[in-house]
Image 1 (tube, one colour):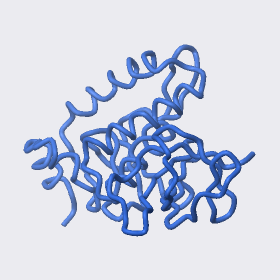
Image 2: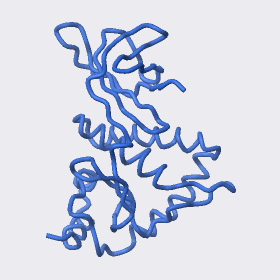
Image 3: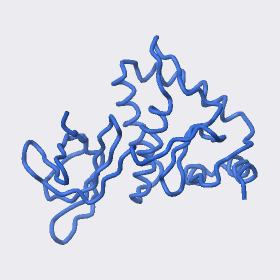
Image 4: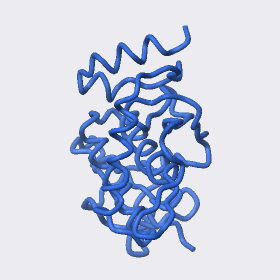
Length: 206
């Protein structure tokens, strides 16, 4: 199977050489690439990756500058996470709250929540945040990636969200006891969630 990536964002800034930075995601694994191109590409267009090069409709359009893969990231289900999912500051670990079910049933299908929430929401969100995109934008794009992956499993987004949201509320209502010391607090800082921040700091080892 060829590596097919979907463009999720193109930097508005254009360099003096006429190139602009483009970020694309392969949602199955997932993986992310960043490259430069002078092609007038749009969000949602599909690209093919062969080795270090990016192709559009069979034509080489750029060389990969950065590539990130879920294969290089650890998953942890051993901590309390107020927002259910999260990631370490260095991006090497993704977290799912230890009380959140590892598997849920949606429309008579078993769904692995570390795959849907951890790898297909939290991880792309962290990748985009590390590319200096603001949290709301990164969260919006990550939600789209999660949705695409969930629907590829043969369930509806509405049905999935209905089950997940019930569990999200249960997790948020619990008082934190064991937060990871490396947790990236960007989502909490953006939301100005002082109560959650205080809980995280009190429950995180020094």
